[in-house]
Image (tube, rainbow, N blue to C red; front, side, top):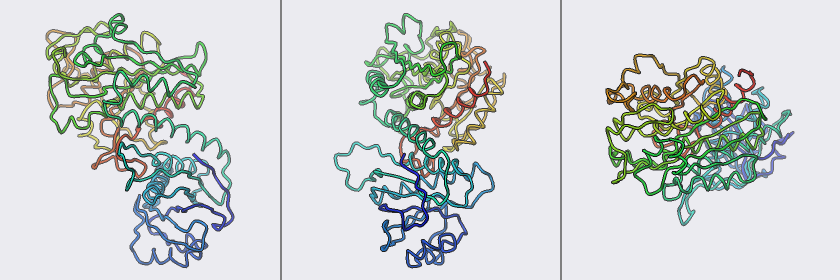
Length: 504
């Protein structure tokens, strides 16, 4: 992220464009009298015309030829809320919409005006900067960039009030943005580029200058350790399954471990229970959980967080072939439980279950968080605007909900009542991997996973609806189409809050 400049007049702003926030129902002429004068009254005319409504993400351009910046991007922020966190989310959307419009205009240097009357100081600065940083991203493989949005080369924020600690705020935002670009690149890439063979290599390259240890358990090690769930799901692909482990010891020797596990199905065809083509078309995103878990490790290491973090990413391709695992197979998992495979397309829970059981034994962690594009059921329940939260611990639930409010990355808690466990009872094994078709599938997936964490405090985030943006959502101005990196800011905030409480 760039700089924060304290200004006395908009005349001091030197950029290719200036973006300003506009809440619904507020006169631009009254809110920005100096700027309106510099624009020859064009801001007031925009308000009076009714062409600009001030809706969230709406952006209009007003030309100001006598100013250094020459263009003013007026960005709608909707109705001004009383709730502090809702206001911060609108400022995040403002930063994202400002950069998005600047990208379409091919602006190279963008000044973003911090609202002078917000009164939130560093919080407001951080929110605007986060939105701008997240929006300033494009992933394409076109041979020509003609007609495509272009990332803004420099984004800086201007305001009329001093913001204490602005350098540290923008440094942290920049690091998390860098981590999110890594996670989004991994999630957006097709399986021809990022797969169980190449995913670990890309991660090792990204982490080579950071104080972390990267370990990869190959097929032989997986077999030696007894990670049979990972082996079974990956058995149908010529690219053999792996378990990627990243360790960051920022808390020092003897400090408790925190674990984040991410579902890394690099492509999911459904196995022998083959998906329909329409469903399969988006399955490069089935590795989003692993990609975002890697981003969390990257940010934690680069920020120097004072905690010990282990990230585990089981990496597979779930493909049909003569060597694929089959319906009605029985798998003895890492923790000794046997699983009847009722459907080979419920594969993510099998690889996560093994990874989490392995983490429990290896780290005795204070908490495990898993991130997974696990079920279509969570999309039916919540749409594309929130992740499902499942947990076995009341404190974990409380802290995760606090972190959700603070970051704007919404989660909604679901129950794990004992009645749901009846749906995964098996006549021939300890448990089966699915319940009744179309019935509480998000809850059933979480209930299955809970069997593999023992007494360890645990949170499962089903990000199937939020991991990537498409036509129906998520609809945030700071989300480009494709991977969103949803959950990275959320889990980082959750981990720092939980570590600060000192339990364990």
